[in-house]
Image (cartoon, rainbow, N blue to C red; front, top):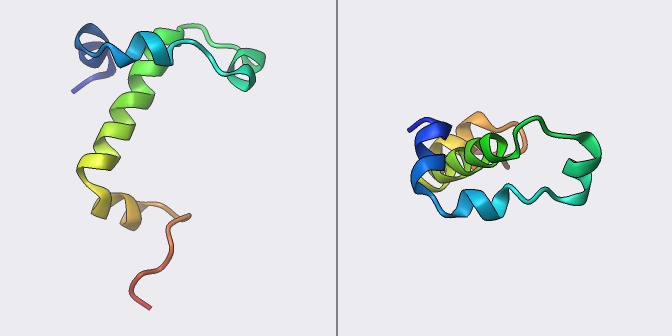
Length: 64
């Protein structure tokens, strides 16, 4: 699902588009698109946590 599709259907986008202080300081050309992308990534990580552990250099090494 693209961030645009998420934005059309996801009520969380409006709330997440309210920028955090550090995001406000850095600036955002399109807070709603940014929010939709963040939420889509978060949803993907929740739906497939095993991929997150394999892809993230910050995840602990669970195999050894």
